[in-house]
Image 1 (tube, helix red, strand yellow):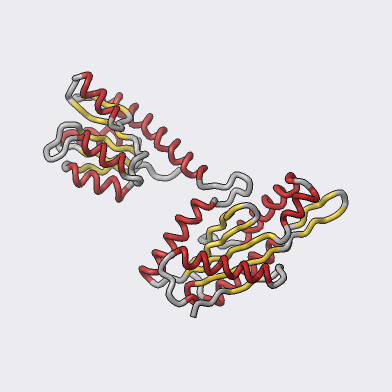
Image 2: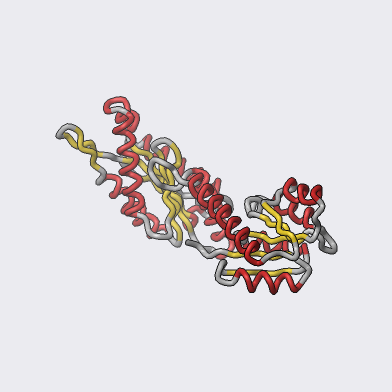
Length: 300
């Protein structure tokens, strides 16, 4: 399980002391700030599992802080527990209406504090699980297109920042429609599952294998120059060629076409779309050239 953390945004230092004392051992990390702006900044940077937020603070009240956090994609799913001395029912309802998950009345019972934080942690972990599931292709177990887009953007950003080269390998299974038409979609699904397993087995731990859509796959290769990318691509394509589905005493073999684009050979490549288009164009040339081959894109 990943480490858990709580962010406390409260201008009362005594609250910081109580929270730290009670939640030590419940969560791995507790960060306390006493200014709303600092709390918003830390929430965006640190992505805590739970936020404890005071309603009555100078400069900006807790309602406005909560609204800021709920408007930001990085923090909108973090459970927020309001801390307040205000027992006004309308104010407590407002805390929930603006996005709070729950509230704790001050002076709070420490057992209650721990119980509510534990409940919020479970909510946070459920959100995290749902986010992860939404980024996984159910059939192959590989990352899906949305996850690939994010990973490719991050890889290109790293390339632009520190010059670390990245490559994108686009793969299309040859004549896959004939597999479905001849043997049925159940066999087609078996092929896709086995290809997904082959990609996981042949990729390095820091490469990212994705199902791009249908019978098309994409591999993001990190820390590679042109030669290393070619070697990695060849290893991956060999893995696909070894996939064999047994059908009534016969063996159905799989072949693929591929396009490879690397930042080391593309010249200027400052955005993910450029690399994606280059790899896709190379894949198209591989298919037009007779399939069962890889074409490497050049941009110089």
